[in-house]
Every structure is written in C-alpha cells, then in structure tokens.
Length: 407
Image 1 (spheres, rainbow, N blue to C red):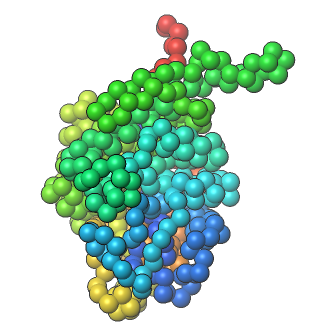
Image 2: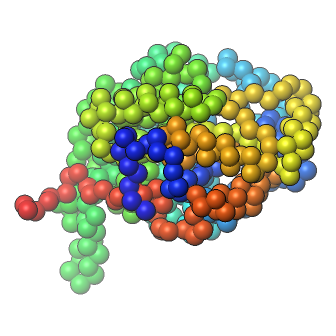
C-alpha cells in the first residue's frame, strides 16, 4: 500500500481500502458495560482478558488497537473522583499491557495512551521503543494531555494545570524529544562481534541536545533504534476541546502520523479535516502523509430495534442516558458500513471505533462489519504488511543523525 495521498486527494470518495482501529477501555465505553452478560468483570485486570480482546481485533484484520489510560481514576466529574462504586474504576498500565500482548499477536498494531503532561519523554521514548522491539515493528503511541487539577496533585510538580494552549505546546515538545531519541541510535549502531569484542559503535550513538521551554534533554537513548525507525505517533481531539479544538488540531497537524477527530456528522468531519490540513500546510508539512480517523462509539446488533433496546437497557443500569464526546451509532453492521462510506468522503482515511460493550460490540465489528466492508470491496482480506507503518502505508524513515554519503 502506498503512502496516503496529499491533501488534494483526501476528499475523493473512493474504492481505496478503509483503515479501521478499535479503542479498548475496560469492559467497553458504556459505563454499565461491565454488567452486560459475557463482560468478564472479574478478569478486567488480567493479561488474558486483554490478550483475548486484541486477538479478536486481529482476527478481524484491523489495523491497530488503542489502549486507554489516564493518571487518575475514571470519573464522571471533571473536578475529581466522583465516589461512584457502580462503574469500573481502575486500569492496568497501557504500555505494559500492550507489551504483554505483543508476543501473542503477529500483525495488528498496538497503540497505548500516554499522558505527556506529567511524564518524561526520555522514559516514554524507551518504553515505546521497547514495545516496538517486542512486537517486531507494530508499536505506536497516543499522546494525550492532562488539564485536571486532581491529576496534577498526584505529582506535586505544579500547583495548577498549564493553560490549555500551553499543554499542547508541551505535548508537541514531548513528541519532538521522543522522535529525536528514537533516532539517536543509527540502525547499524550494534556490531555484536564476539571475535573483536565490539558490541556497539559509539560513533553511531548521538546526542540530541534538545533545549526547549519544557524539556532539556541531551540523550542519547539507552534503547537501540526501533524496528520501525519511528513508531506511529497519534493524538486525539474532542468535541468542544478548547472551544474549537484548534490547539488539539494543531498538535495533530504538526506532530503526528495519525489524528483522531471526535465529530458528530460528515459535515463536522469535513470541517475538522479542512482545519487540520490547513494547519499542516501552514507548518510546511503538506507533503508528509497524515491519516485522519473519526472516533465513533458503536452499539451493534442484528437489527436496529435490538441495538436500541440494548443501549436503553444499559442506560437504565447506569441511571442516565449514555453521552459521548463524539457521535454514537446504534444499529446494524450494514447500516454502520453505509455511514463509514458516507463519512469517508469528508477526507477521512479511517475510523477508530469505540465498542459500547467489548464483549458484544467488538465481535460485531470483526465478524459483522468487517465482512460487510469486504463484500463492498473497501477493506482488506488479509494483512499486507508486518509493521504498523506498513499497514498504514507509511515509509520507514531514516535516522536524522545518521551520516548519509553524498549522492
């Protein structure tokens, strides 16, 4: 698959294959998902539960899965813990979960969430590089920011959260440091010659000497260059973030390979794509490939009334109608396929689907939606690459510090 086309080609409706990912979070995105039959609430903090979920996604030939994470307990309140005991609270570490699942899978990409705001890019760079080595080239990361005072109190470094725009500026610096550290080892830095006793060529390890407003990092990394060279960097925007989402869009445009946009309809997707493309062009990156995925929460069943009834039953258990920062789809796999093909004309290259209930809606995606899209000729019938960059049509970049012989 070739690299995704530049901006001028993004609005073509097309017969090109869709990209599909799923966002995994607990028992599912509905707060009452853990109470659904088959949800396995007693296993949410076991490796087997996550291995089974990712295996199901891989059986459906999906491009990648994302693992949600945060620096505080889940809460329905932006001011801190809500004290509720009737919803899932607690998570396993996303990067460690992905690393545990990696040897059990062969093709699917693994993209854990990392909060840039209170973490050090040096630590994150080696964690994701390690994941890329363990998975043999299938790692990515989803950078997110935290603007919550109760999360800041876990670390004690800041009395108050950074202003909105500054949080995203810090995240951009975080990504830049990570990317430079991944390049701080040349691809052939390891010699491993027992006869001569030389394991590494020190001349092929490089200081990155990053000096910015938020970080000062000399490097080099302690982890050899990842198999992909640069694991896939992703970030998300949310409806209403920063009023119009401009700071999040700017981060996606300047710093990522894949951006997720939370929109309500095709017109919203079209507007988001246009704004991000304009920001990328202004940054001088228009020629560089960028995938944009729409986020969509889904409840799927054999017919639309059954899907509606299941969602209503879950809402009753939760004590309130389910709401989301993005569109919520309730219906059949064929109806969802119609919607995806309609929205993709807005310039999207794919979708990150959030299963309302993993036990029900993930298999509905892999065994219902995927075959429907295959029948329509818009989704793969086999994995065509061994790395996540390959699945997304992204070339493997050379190291920025490596010596390049003159042409």
